[in-house]
Image (cartoon, rainbow over all chains, first blue to last red; front, side, top):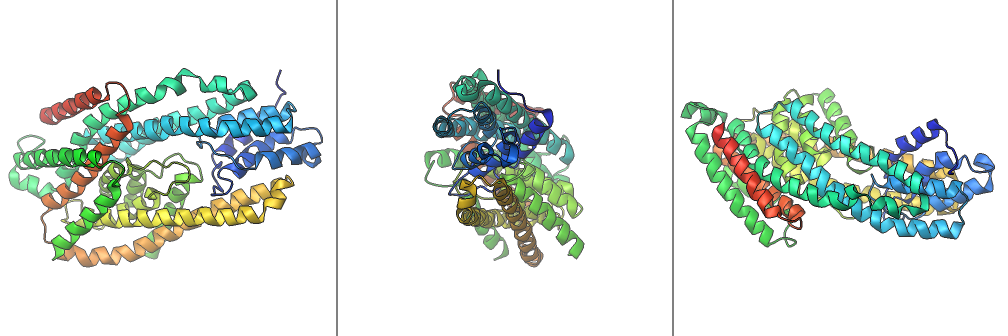
Length: 267
Length: 227
């Protein structure tokens, strides 16, 4: 049986998880953040805040560590349990080292490459379908944060439950099979969102053109041609950028294009 | 430009800049949110959203992974959204100039984030003896100092960028000769191309991803035609 931790301590740990990267640096990475998050539970060690066990544990937990910020919750739960169960220091240090790689790569694939772009593309689809500014924003924030809050809460609970056997929690189907499903959702939503977004942005930014063309439907003929031409150009540019993948960053290319557009427009 | 709106924008830029990495990472720093808020502060949320949507397309390419250096889209989007609200969305050049200013600010923001990380590293190195002694006060102080530095970074970046770009945009806007259609098409076209390439790069390893993408394009075009 794992030791008991008061509910308010869990709340303190969960609240601190939101600032786990507060002092992120190239030396310790998220290390001090892990020490900061585990600290409320370490007060439960024999001797309390003045005891040697507490100081040793704070020192251990504040050293170099790397993880995805949301899955760091799992590390915190597991490390707290290991410390409170009195695992030998060497074992905890080996366990910490072993956790770094998987928690980073799993989180990156699941969240940064999956959940985040999926939430963005969903919001862009809603925008393209005509949603207002605040509806678009609320849908993005709502969908994204259901995922990230759920992941943090689950990670903390799973880490505490499995302790040093956290590899079992990492075998969870959502973590193993989630990324490919999310990747397919990203592909599907990208296909839907991009034409709709282009159409709506052009429709609003060229409002005087719409009035000149005369509106017989939501998309007047002048805008329809513009949207079609932009879509074709976008597709060709995207194929070219995919061919040069890794050799060119899109935002840098966009910067060059915007500078050229500005110079051309005011020359 | 009133000092009140500059202060409000700077504070907003500080909060969303903090959200990028340090606290709380609930993604109010995504362009679609931050630019809308930036536009709302100066009175036009919709103009902010339009620029935010285009910046969001660009930001889809960025993977905010660990130690990599990447553009800081949060504070930059606040600046872009606020600048877009200087004209109507249909003012020729208004959105393109706001986008240009935002991308330059995002680039500069990436460097400021790198600087804050290095400063955090200096503070951590100086305090290593206390950390090794298990002094929780030192750990807490490092966290708070890092958070304060990042907040200040976002505030200063937003204030400087907005104060710098606002008069420039006002100066260039009347000289803008290109029509609204071409300006908008180039700006949204390049951003959408970046987003399409990024989405493909994220999904290409998944089974049948190309069919999902093709199916999505068909659905998107069908909705477009039906509208």
